[in-house]
Image (spheres, rainbow, N blue to C red):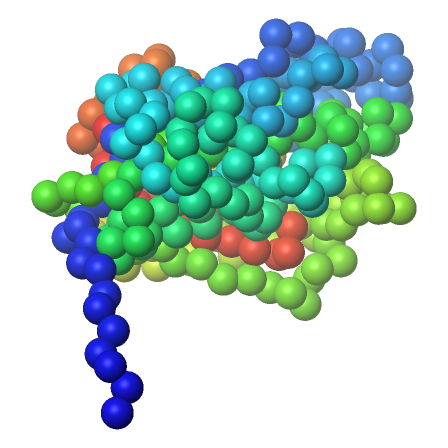
Length: 325
């Protein structure tokens, strides 16, 4: 008879302890893009809702942005790096698969010998990472987990392709997850639609290509039901939700999701993230960037019930309810 194994006992619940974000200094307006491609400010605003976005410098790396955002999240939580034992970096734009971003980021922040790994669920990556972090703490595998969505999408975009160059941008957003007496992170509801893998892919193994109209139709019809499932999994109703932060892919998609949720019972005064207007689509970074920006602007406050929904290439999607730290 085999000896019995001992299992760790984790926290009863988890919450976000702190958040942080960063963006490059260079602001790129729609008029700037019109100088290099056939587009204009009105065309971009009407189709995707973007006014401006941030582009990283040639020597500014994904890892650099992740370090800054992660350090800010620790400072916001009042947590020393020595208290963190796991680092997860959702991203899809590391220049090479080896080495991963997480170990480098952890070392530069001063986190010693943590479990460190990247995950690639594209624009759903942060929600995937947040779900994993919560489960790691609840299982006892980790005590505190730093999740950093970071992207340098300008490395993966053809600057002459107006279908992608007007949308994607760079940045990083982070959240520190730790134990709690009361649940502050609801169950993750996730899935994929691999039969639509050809909607978003890397063209010539170099540039992001997407079938814009197909992605739009899929997101506007499929994401509201996923959001509702996430609310139900948390034991809440749509009327309990104060703030909606979907992945910032396209303002029309964001507004469509909000409209469908209101039709199903969400409040008219539901606050909806529109960070894409001034940040563009930053993939894995978009949800934590929006959360941090909205909190700084007073649009979301401590204790608010916030619904997160990520979706993107794969096609992968995920969502969960959190309580704002």
